[in-house]
Amino acid sequence: MIPYTRHYIDEDDIAEVVKTLRSAWLTQGQRPEEFEEQLAGYCGASYAVVFNSGTAALHGAYFAAALGRGDEVITTPITFAATANAVLYLGAEPVFADIEPDTGNIDPAAVESLITTKTRLIASVDYAGHPANCIAIHKIAAKHGLTIVEDACHALGAMYLADGNWRRTGESIYSHMSVFSFHPAKSITTGEGGAVLTNNKALYNKLRLFRQHGITKSIEAFHYPPDGDWYYEQQALGYNYRMTDFQAALGISQLKKLDHFIERRREIAAFYDDTFRGNPYFDIPVERDYAKSAYHLYPIRLKDRDKKKLAFSRLREKGIGVQCHYIPVYNHPYYRTRYKAQCPNADDFYQRQISIPIYPAMAQKDTQIVSDKIREVFEEMDNYGTK
Ligand SMILES: *Cc1c(COP(=O)(O)O)cnc(C)c1O
Image 1: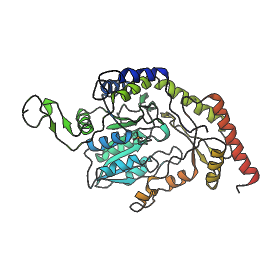
Image 2: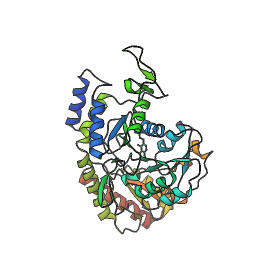
Image 3: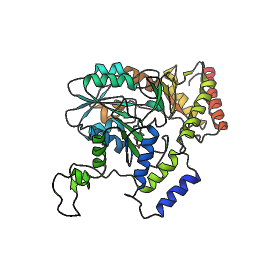
Image 4: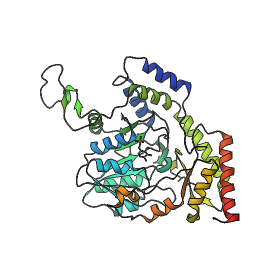
């Protein structure tokens, strides 16, 4: 089976992890901070705080934004459930805004129409690695005094055009915080891992506090005079969300290859674009003029949505590891009882969308196999019907 995604690990990565395993610090050493500095440097943000997953990083970002009971967060249903789950962790309520039918990203106009007196935050998602329309979202948020958390878990290495300059996702100019994941499916991996990037010192301090049980050892931050040299304070209810040193070591090594990874992803996307442009069976992903996608996914959208089930299973039978991104979050049983479907574009997108294999280590011969099998499956369905 050619998977829809796969991590890329080389001997340099392995050596870096082994070096850290042989060091005095498996956790709470220098490597997470080193990774944070490099990540912030790469993206052009002032601060990065690494976490032990992207989900923990989202939880941290929402906590730092002081989200709580009674607050509403406007987000997209076409995302991994964690974007909305972490809102619920803090007792706040997700509100689902509809998407743009072509990019699959949250529609700024839909966001604005859902703002109430309870709205506190907008959680946008850079679906498939294509930056959401962050400038339009930023305008809306500024007008209504809302915080923006950009779930950029798909989009490390993506870029967008603002005022004539190409900027990196994660620079956090049009959002208060940007969140990344380092799950093996994402741009770079630490096994499990995540990060929040920000330019705001106060948010940075809250993120660090939250990651470590709500505990601080920093004298300047103490509420009370220290009892002695052992003194530290728990000032909030935090979690143990730390990344280990050997995971950070892997992240440091992976980050060096990020530009090559994105280049290869974009090369594969260009090959698929050329192969499939104008075909009668499905639409290829769009890339807006303002965006350079990280192509975390290559989502195709079938013209005939009744063919999705059969096309999907036939592709799997032929060894093509297709996936679906995503079941709209409000359709999951956990959400279904509380949220009714209210996003026709998202529902339609779900019924047409299939992710086909794309990852940096993918050989050219495999992209050719994938293209051939896809053509075969759709032509067979055309010739012999869908029974
Ligand atoms: C992967 C992902 C997450 C969660 O990240 P983990 O590291 O798996 O916890 C959150 N949001 C989106 C959009 C993701 O793709």
